[in-house]
Length: 187
Ligand SMILES: CC(C)(COP(=O)(O)OP(=O)(O)OC[C@H]1O[C@@H](n2cnc3c(N)ncnc32)[C@H](O)[C@@H]1OP(=O)(O)O)[C@@H](O)C(=O)NCCC(=O)NCCS
Figure 1: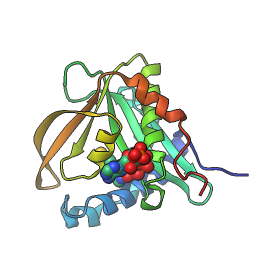
Figure 2: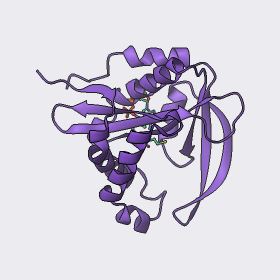
Figure 3: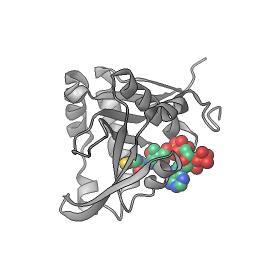
């Protein structure tokens, strides 16, 4: 019997990840990013980007997908070495996106845990994530022990935004979350 599971992404997942990427951005960022930008997001363009990211292992990037029996790829998460110069944190969670219908079931927690384990396996000990200050996902990171580290203004898609960094100085407890049974995951 097919079950929902988290697994490392393969190059052949690029188009499916791009579809989730675009759909999730369109449900997550209205009111935060300009509508014009969200309307123009192209799954074809992101499929090419993901093809190259999955092939090149850029900066040691590793990507995981949530594969569901019902809908195929329904979420993804991506991590690697830190890109922004916050001292004391060698790793970074670059992206974590689930389709609406897969949110609130414990998969975000498990994907974050899988990324933490991946960073530990590659010799890293700590990690940050940058999240838009207006994105309620930051309460998820706080719930999972992220400490607020920094805040900075950014220009993105023609908008002036503020992003916040959360950090975990020890990835070991976070990695244990990967083994937790998902809340409601049998539905
Ligand atoms: C943010 C996201 C990855 C969280 O994943 P999820 O599967 O919905 O969250 P989980 O079910 O694993 O929740 C884990 C815990 O965080 C809490 N939590 C999750 N989202 C929350 C929110 N927005 N506000 C407050 N708490 C939240 C849950 O209640 C749960 O707490 P518990 O341990 O007390 O039960 C997911 O909702 C998502 O993809 N959101 C849209 C995309 C996005 O904003 N990504 C982040 C970009 S930086």
